[in-house]
Amino acid sequence: MAKQISVFLENKAGRLSHVTRVLGEAGINIRALSIADTSDFGILRIIVSDPEKAYRILKEANFTVSETEVIAVQVPDSPGGLATVLEQMSDANLNIEYLYAFLGTSGNDALVIFKVEDIEGARQTFKEKGIPFLDEQKLYKL
Amino acid sequence: MSYWDREKECMPREDIEKLQLRRLKETVYRVYAFVPSYKEKMDRIGIKPDDINSLEDLNKLPFTTKQDLRDNYPFGLFAVPMSEVIRIHSSSGTTGKPTVVGYSKRDIDTWAELMARALTSAGASRQSIIQNSYGYGLFTGGLGVHYGAEKLGASVIPSSGGNTKRQIMLMQDFGTTVLTCTPSYALFLYEVMEEMGVSPSDLKLECGIFGAEPWSENMRREIENKLQINAFDIYGLSEIVGPGVAIECPVRNGLHLAEDHFIAEIIDPETGETLPEGSSGELVISTITKEALPILRYRTRDLSKLDKSGCDCGRTHVRMQKVLGRSDDMVIIRGVNVFPSMVESVLLDIPGVEPHYLLVVDRKGTLDILEVRVEVSEQVFSDEVRKLEELGATISKELESALGISAKVRLVEPKSIERSEGKAQRVIDRRSI
Image (cartoon, rainbow over all chains, first blue to last red; front, top):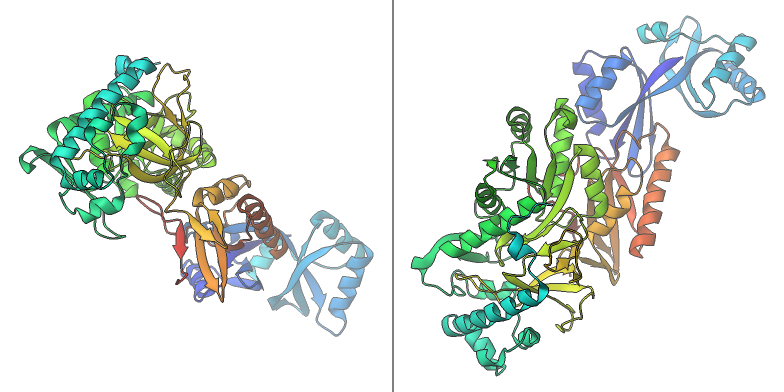
């Protein structure tokens, strides 16, 4: 399991660069990111090297921030790798709210961040099916 | 229950009305003799001071409007020579020529009495430490409250508006018990307290007396919960005297309007017709003791209603309902009257939504568009787009059922809506008509 930081952003010029600058100046590295956007606003979701610090720094900079539990799954970096994982999750009736890919890799595997409704259920399933996922500390240090 | 001047505040209604008639007649004679503008207006409709023989005759008299003050800029409506005027206040004049008001020595003293009554009604006393965060200067809020607080014998901190961090430091260090400012500034103070890590429970604040802009009951609850105080509404306007024209008592079922100095009426803002007690309409006030600037039947543009029935606090002066809108704050959108306070009320009924909002009115083609900007607080924020869109849709639906027109809700970042240190700006009208 891992902590994702989510940030509310208005859809206007300069907001994303402002968030990333604030993080950069605090020495926080972004490990993975995705943006969900609508016509008026966006939600920036990031995995960072130090989530607690990132949360504090962004709050101080007047951003609306939240912490969300997500899970970082190691997916074989080969054709059909993600499909296999998704099929197994579907078989286990795990609802995925969203997912996005990690910027780097872990050994030979790609990393995909999953936000699921039932995070405990997901952990169980991954364990049973032998799908590896990364623990928090290892993830932040990648 | 404590009173500043029990005899006057709890005077039998019959005596109030006798006193009002006597003072009204004096005022009418005086303005007819000394203020050319009043004489001209009365002559034009054929009314002589002798025609006023009962309080009902009041509606024979012409109205006074903000425009009259502008037309007679700066001192044309004064009824005393300048040697008798000891204070001049003025509006900022952002919407036209400023309106200028003058006070004789007795006027200043009356005003201080009214403010001392108001402060007492809200629970302040000689023991209170009153932090007065209304702006000092040409605006009547600062000095008006200040003189009343001194008359009361409380300790006044004349902190004026602005410099919010210092305001909070003063509250901590001086042990402020009573806060006076606009309701929107009270909420802003709370936000800054949060940022500074100051909890209201560490302060000695007991009550706040808030006015100078309309605010809803939901806003009151919000302020009371956050600042952990009792919040009282105070009413006043510089054209009449300034703050202290009316004040809530602990019963908080309307504001007692000082009837020994003013006469209140409710009129239909369209036709100007006087409406019976209990009707909603525009509040019209006549001053009956003012020397320097007596004003007959001033159109306040504030919407309210009056109730002369007894109050559990023992005060007998008429209660005006909390002003929820001004006819000039009102925006007409697709033919529907919309007050910012209606929007505020809707927002505060939705858990987690903050009362920081802005109405932006625009016109696309021939259609008016209302956009309501609402700040996304941490309580309502979600990492899922769907949930935020649901929030927007909920607000939009609630607004539509309360206002009767559709509104587009735009979720914006926290603190992106400008905070005011005085009167909050709630509406931007971009329609060019």
